[in-house]
Image: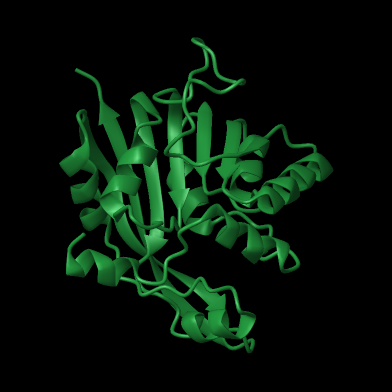
Length: 236
């Protein structure tokens, strides 16, 4: 690994246990509301099979299921997946969740068959605020997520274009050990990573920075920019 890659990945959690500790050691982390950028990006798409990689507590997958998508979410944390399944049941949403690592979650699974494959079988694959785990690079992670996109399907990546200035201090206070030394992500940068390692052709359907209103940990209003990339897998 080169020095720049080490710098980018320094402090990024390298085990399933780190993510499980983060969720199990706290009350629900997220708001339960879908990502606004996701809602906007998929608004014009025809619902089909969708995979949410790193689904966390399931808000995005649940929203998609409520809007006609055949939604599956996977996450490294058992606690996160349990919370997602409970939230889906409470809302009557037909979303399914599973503990899995995207790099090994393939056609060998019990819920996978020729008609409904995992790898290369989803019309839409989503990665919202994905975290690279050592020793992988972001290019490798994007490639692993993209492998699940079906021909003529789409990949949606929503990432921090900038990290919240309070994130590292907050992480230290909570003791999660998940601090991030983060390189800015751009839609075109992620697209370059996607096509650089992919054996199939892709085109950009949407590439933009979106500003969203947030609250700081002490309740003050703030704004953050997110990188949004929607890429279409081209069939020959």
